[in-house]
Image (tube, rainbow, N blue to C red; front, side, top):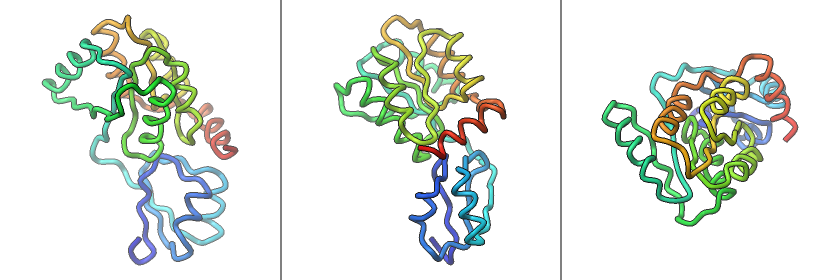
Length: 200
């Protein structure tokens, strides 16, 4: 923090995050889509801290990871890279089960180190459940394109756990495109999810 100005890197700002920034905070810079919990918003007003929202000019990383080596994922990533769409490989210790995979990826997204993540694993429900314990994570377990589209549209999913094996090259590619192009959930759902985040 320089001269009371701090740039928040995360995708969600809660009251306890704000309290960790210290008493000298005068201005807080956040990305345009950062979610503020109601308690954090009230505390900013009480402290007289200026909130500055900044448009995101550069695309942020979309991460991907898996619980095993799946050749079709590598093929999709290579093809997308040739098209100029680079995904960030999430470095996990080999042999992580689905639940730990979801928790690890969720922490990266929650901290704002990447916009979203796609996980390919044998137990997507376990991965999504573990990730959803983190504030600001909207994880969904899917096994087809229709479910992935619904998760993006209604939930504003920022972490997708895809059931493997069994997905085709086309399905993997489409899920990755969905996450790159995610717009967030519609306003009514967004407000409800923001209130639920405040209670966690």
